[in-house]
Amino acid sequence: MQHITNALTDEETALVADAQFFRKKAQIMVKVRGMLEATHQALTGEMCQVSLLTPPDFDPRAHQFVKGEHLESFPYQYLDCPKQFGGGTAFTFRTLFWWGHHAVCALMLEGVGLKQYKRHIVDRFHRLAGQDLELSLAPTFWEWKRGEGYTLPITHDRKAQIAAVLAERRHLKIVRVVPITDPRLQGGQLPALSLETFRAILPIVTA
Image (cartoon, rainbow, N blue to C red; front, side, top):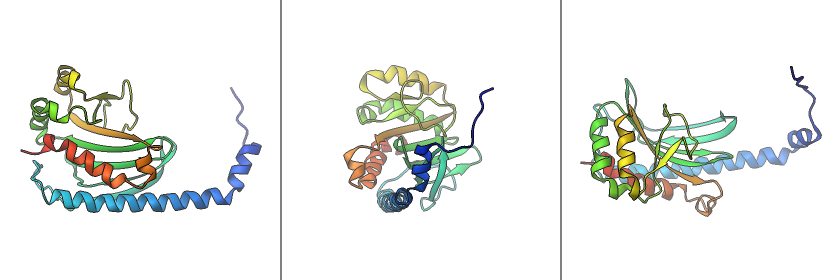
């Protein structure tokens, strides 16, 4: 069995001793929270202008801000707006900022209305395709990686493939992934990216 020492390496010691690093981290967390608050305002305003096909007892005002340190060992912050989970039903749009990885805008659907949402994806496929949207292939909502085995890009040439995958799904998660290094994120444009994605997925959840 490999012996794991509790001793810190020189590199680890330098990192822990770097107080400026932790101050910068705290500043970044505040900035991301500000972007998510602006995203909440943008999405709330947009929902006032559209008629969504929602589950019973849906509350468009329901939302949640969350931050943590351990999404696969990396810090994260997210906004759910709108937010509905529970009783086997989901109608949630999440804007997630995942340190070391990417930002993700995700529509999560389950339960009431799922058959109709699937039908809309197929019937309105070419309104959705080509907008950097991807279908999650994960067995749960809580997988946030992308790429082969995790997500399937919704492109104009994949209608039959997407339709076949949809037929087997008990829940839906449609995502748009933006690298952390994207200039728009660096420029604080997460609210615009989230709103753009929300508008792109509207054909799924509107009459």
